[in-house]
Image (cartoon, rainbow, N blue to C red):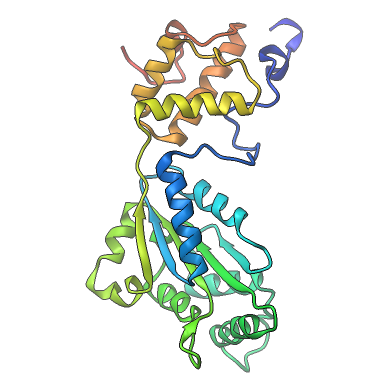
Length: 273
């Protein structure tokens, strides 16, 4: 490596186009993504709740995070729980922490404290409505599902006090379809399944990431793009990972463009001809 030149200097980009540590203000959005954003925003405005499902790597969390970032902070208070595999009490404590509810003392159960706190938030002169987002929601215990649903309703007014967005893999959709989950499913206005990208969308996704990073649009040769899109089958996370490894290899070899020869000779990516 000549003078240990960094990747940024070697490729001349603003930042690594496929880095997970660089937050993008605007994610890549398909037509379906944009439709989902419009529908979700409208549903939240009416106090509705929903579930977003799909295979791992289809962009569920990124899309919901984008939706949350666009909500009016004067109306909505996002409550983001990044892991649904927490035990029942830990889920409630995570919600309480986000709402700055005191969890000490045993004079009142935490669930009741949360219910009262949310009702106070929505009853004030300028009401604030929590939007509780649970990622990896397929890991939630049934009791946690019930607890979360109990936070949504104002018992006296019979109106909604908060909304819930569940994010999970295809197991979540199957779980919600069970007869025993009817009380939870009935709270979900919609259960949306995100799909993998098409081949053209995969190419657009790569081009979008390159443009956002101010990288060379021809960083991947046409043959390399065909191989990557076929191998990754529209999974955004897989595209990100494969592209990262290939750029590392190109940097090591001092090659400005990723081509098919580099891909097939790279032992860090399992792609066969």
